[in-house]
Length: 301
Image 1 (cartoon, rainbow, N blue to C red):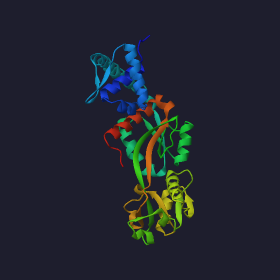
Image 2: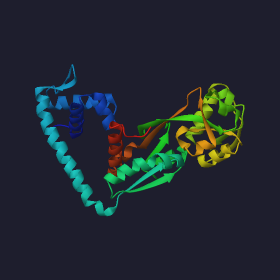
Image 3: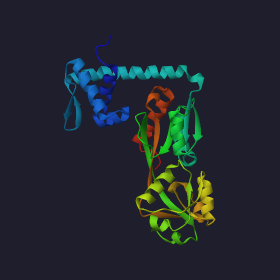
């Protein structure tokens, strides 16, 4: 039996490599106190101090440097084992099931999945289209491996990886009175018929919460699941709407005006997955891929 914790050794390796408890915690999807506890446990098992705080961050002691050299070899070997397992399973066409909104399936998810499939061409990616509320339900029931969702609620069962921030704007037809303004208030918007996404939509939830915080009750005349339908309805002068700025293409701007909202509204888009599902090797690869894109600032924003 080992006289030390292998998990603690992995945590130690990442802290030493990144010279930061907080960065290691983010990489390992742990809390910083959790990382600290692992280091304390390993130091207690070894009987020596392994890390100290220096001027340039975390530094290794003499004993820490010796342990780190062995940890490097273990991490390298574990990577080779993982690759070997993947190579054995190549013929099985592993599947990654992702849920996303119709908007993100069109403007964001293709580039995200495209780079992943290029790196792992044997993985079959299936994308399910749902609103934010439906996605969380499918995730918790195990129907999908991950979801691209806006403003996810924190949960003990779910891990969250931030991806990008989306601005919400008002859209009107080109002849609408509000189209002449550079920015408008929520009070101004409430004077006109409002077309909104259906219940369960994050865009709807954020917009209505903003109205309520100002004591305003907007006049919602139509609710629909399709953002494309909303844009057509607005372009015909049948109402105004609040949507993600990104969804209006350059071609559509010939019929639709985008107006900034004075009380800034944003959606924080994240990838969410069940903590218990971290043993899913395909999901783990996708998580690592997203972390790589984030570290290189390659996620579109």
